Image (cartoon, rainbow, N blue to C red; front, side, top):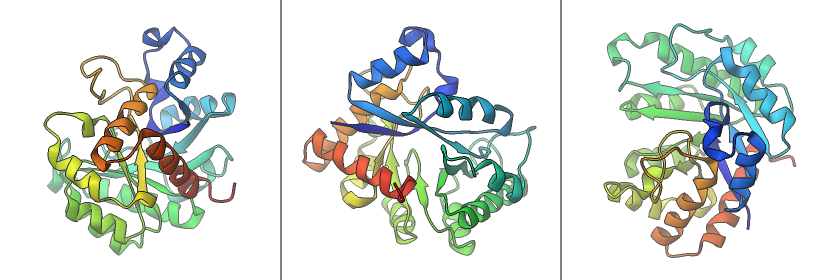
Length: 258
């Protein structure tokens, strides 16, 4: 069985919790059948660290982008995103999107312009987008529609079925994180039942959002296993089935030519 963590921040893990090295963290993950990882970039200042991880480890891939809440940082042009994404191990554009929880909607013209540039870079490069949305679902979907966003994933999905359906209609995938294991997340589990099998992904967003049974402790890419396990329960299938489906979906979205 192989599970892929489609969204994690390995460069931000405290490796002391996992034996003190990337290698020990990868071994820990393999024990739970988590064997490949997409390490997601959130600012250009740390892009080289993310890329280096991907260059050094066959099982790690990377993205390039600037998170919607990253302020006082380098703000990329479309041309810069295209140049940085040309590396073979860079398989996605993002993390990008809109976040009105941390930044007021009325003071977010720059955030929307940044999102627009990422959409353009994705469309030109043909590499899928990784989209973050928080308290901004209507504007996020509207911009995806207006800018003709062509492919990607709604990562760490925590919205309603209407938002999921709108993203699915645009050809996007839906990725579930440890939130789906939380006791308070029944409405999200109801959404998870409905997502078509060929659009489903799993992730940890580690080091954030640790799933049950380790909630409250440091998160690890290994714990993608528990996200897949919960989805299997919710959808009335086996974890092996979820592993196979989400691995195939990851390859279809991020590495269609392999």
